Image (cartoon, rainbow, N blue to C red; front, side, top):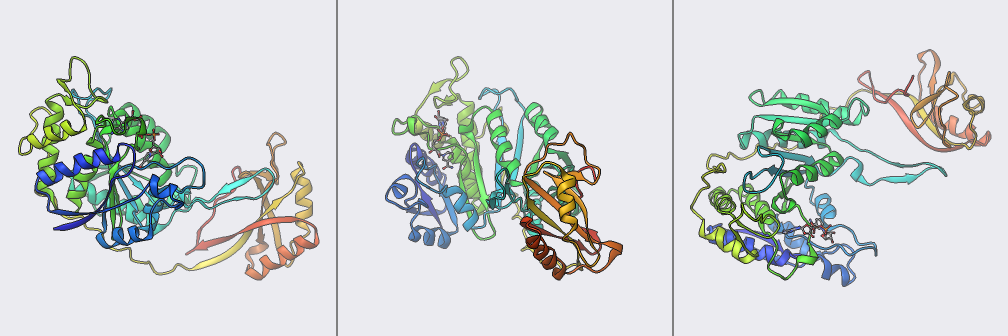
Length: 478
Ligand code: NAD
């Protein structure tokens, strides 16, 4: 018996969880549940995290967490339990299968069957933000090699296990050459280890357009956090209903499974909600813990039930659906179909699912890191870049020179355009002339001289080369 943690959540949560668990037990899943309370009640009792510390102990002990949707109260500094859980438990991979159930669920994309694998921990979601000047705020986009390696390997291993043919990577590395560039580079490196699986890369903008228009062109798509957040909702929606999709959040130790939709409070307590999304999350959970037999039985019975036209209100269509049912009756229909297979929709087979091979990240030997200059960011209210350049030139000494100024990334000095709009946030690059040695002592001197010249420095970024390769971007137009 595998012990799993269950939270029934808020709104429609308890109803869809009861329905899901009933199906799981009827299918003979060898699980034992330990229930915890999370969500609205806990938030409103004054716990801004929405979860008690004893509940964390339960989740960490059992490692597998099946969670119904919860209501995050508006305002009041309540933290999203989803984001906290993903980060605390290191759930780096978010897996969302999005499949059309044509002709049983209405969709413009009848042959769509793709899986979005979203990096779940880093990117702009590190949430490191600062206001730097009157006019400019920033959010740090952090992408790490371990983060990329883990998620890209997960995508290929998942494709291999699920017998999928292609993995596509979406990034914007034509613009973000360092961050998205690293994601793309790691994708290319790891793709080589899976020659039996086709691989391709799309720039996210045209890739997203293609996915919304011709989703059948894709199979597994892996991408950084923010793009995945947006596109996984788009992909689920265009299959026909968000009420049908489940999601897995996978980490090295723990995993959390859920529906993609929220707690739909207006539908709560009326035996109306579709339990399919949570059930799909639960099927992924059973596969994850090796209960493939029960997972397969449930998935085929669920497909058969939809095919029989037994539908909850959200997917019920006069004419094509046969019977409008509530949450409980839908669950009973799935249970009655256990052991059967769909005849028009494709039945699933998980019997030969091998375990994913996900080795722990191995640190690489450190590169030869060389400091070659510094970007000093300055808050200045003037408008003429030549003026700030004259001031900044005064702070360079011992062969350290001002080489460039950009404003929001666009080079404005030397040889800027008078048309370029400038804010009060200036990035000023200093480097030694004639390739002389540059040290942190030089940075200290520059900053000290800036104080003497009344220049308002707000931050610095060191410019490094790693094994001789430039580790910073050039200014646009440089
Ligand atoms: P929602 O997904 O709860 O509901 C949107 C609409 O979709 C509902 O009004 C309903 O018509 C329909 N719907 C959703 N799930 C359904 C189901 N299973 N069966 C039938 N119809 C269904 O989104 P919302 O109204 O924006 O959010 C409500 C609450 O849920 C908010 O408090 C939000 O913070 C929370 N939420 C939680 C999660 C989570 O816990 N994972 C995710 C999203 C939203």
